[in-house]
Amino acid sequence: MAKMQLSIFIAVVALLVCSASAKTASPPAPVLPPTPAPAPAPENVNLTALLSVAGPFHTFLDYLLSTGVIETFQNQANNTEEGITIFVPKDDAFKAQKNPPLSNLTKDQLKQLVLFHALPHYYSLSEFKNLSQSGPVSTFAGGQYSLKFTDVSGTVRIDSLWTRTKVSSSVFSTDPVAVYQVNRVLLPEAIFGTDVPPMPAPAPAPVVTAPSDSPSADSEANSTSPKSSHKNSGQKLPVAPIAMVLSGLVALFL
Image (tube, rainbow, N blue to C red; front, side, top):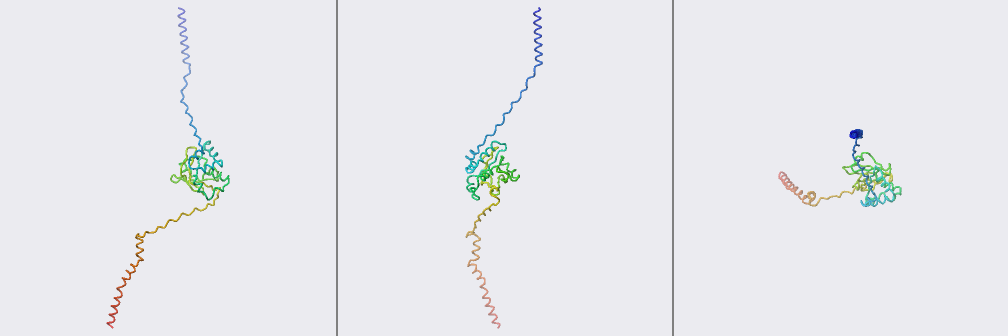
C-alpha cells in the first residue's frame, strides 16, 4: 500500500513539473521572410572591344589608345555611378576633316580633342530633350570645352561653334555607358579659336529652259514671226484706195 501511494505521489509530482515547464517555455521564434538577393552588378563594358566591332571607328579608337584617354573613359564607365556618354565619329568623318587639319595639333591638344567627345554622365537619347534647355554642357575636357544640344523632333543636334552635327545612330546605350555615332568630328573653340571660316555657299540651282513645244515658246515665236508683220501691213492696205477717191471728188468740184 505504501509503495502504491509513493508511486502515485511521484506521478503527481512529475505531472506538476511538466506542467510548470510548459507554462514557462518561451514562444517559438517568428519566421522571417527570406532576404532578397542583392541586384547583380552591371557587367563591365570593354570600350576597346566595343569600338573595334562597331563603326568603323578605327581612327577614333586609335586616338583613344595613343593618348591614353581610353583608360579615363574605361574607369568612368565601370567604376563610377555617373557613367559616361561618348560621341564617336566614323572613319569617313576624320578623312573629310581638312580645314582645320588635325595633323597640326600637339599631343596635348589631340588629347583634349578626344576628351571633348565625351560627357562625364550617362544620357539616354530621351534625356537630351531636357539637356538642351540647360545651356552649354561641360565635356570631359573641362569647363572651357562645352557643347550645346538641341532636340528637334527627337533628333539630337550638337553645336561646338566649329562643328554642327547630329547623333546619327545609337551604338550602345545601357546605363552606365552610352555610345552615339556622329557625322562629323567635334572641334572645340578652346583649341581652334573663334575665327570660324564661313560655310561655302550652296551651288546655284540649274536654269530650267522652256521646251520648244511649250505654249510660252510658241507665243514668243509668234510675236516675232514674219506672219505677224504681214498681218499688220494687211490692215493698212485699205487706206490707199480711200485717199484716191477723196482726191478725185475734190478734183471734180474744182
